[in-house]
Amino acid sequence: MSTKHKLIIAITGASGAIYAKVLLDKLNALGDQIEEVGIVMSDNAKAVWKFELDNEEYNNYTFKVYDKNDFFAPFASGSASFKTMIICPCSMGTLARIAAGISNDLTSRAADVILKERRKLILVTRDTPLSLIHINNMKAVTEAGAIVCPASPGFYSKPQSFEQLAATVVDRVIDLAGLQQATYRWRE
Image 1 (spheres, rainbow, N blue to C red):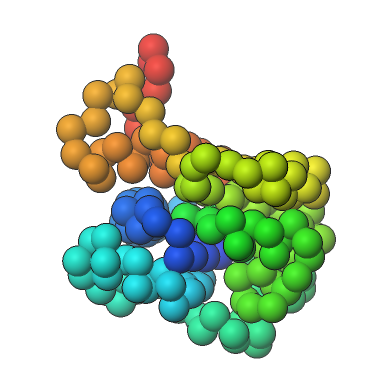
Image 2 (image 1 turned 90 degrees about the horizontal axis):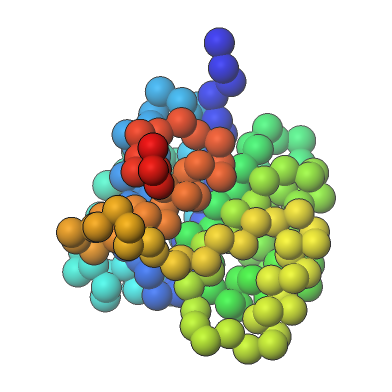
């Protein structure tokens, strides 16, 4: 019997709310592999979701939602058994705070905990072009053990909708998190 996953999902205010929506939808569908999902959303994330997706469906998921400043959330401590954190999408500001070790909200604190405990941190960055500061921050978090997984969609699966296009990134993230899924695989 395999162990079920406990995941932290942080959603920042970077453009790309479709990635967060597709990720939450897919995690919902993979519920038999998941013990718990804790969600943290910034105020900007909610505003961007409403603007880009024309809805507030982030309120409709059954996952537990934590306030962005709730330092009493279980995953604010390394003693909690959350093994994976996904920040999707990850703003350059959030990346910078993590790279500098600044834990000024639950997202950056949880990321700091994940890194110090040598667990899996996946950052779905979305900005382009990148400045040298962004690149150096990506280097710093990678050296600390994080995985930078840019939101660069693939086209070889011939996606037919925005959600299918976003899924080409999200499916990679789900693979990186160690969950099993049926998805398009090159030449398989």
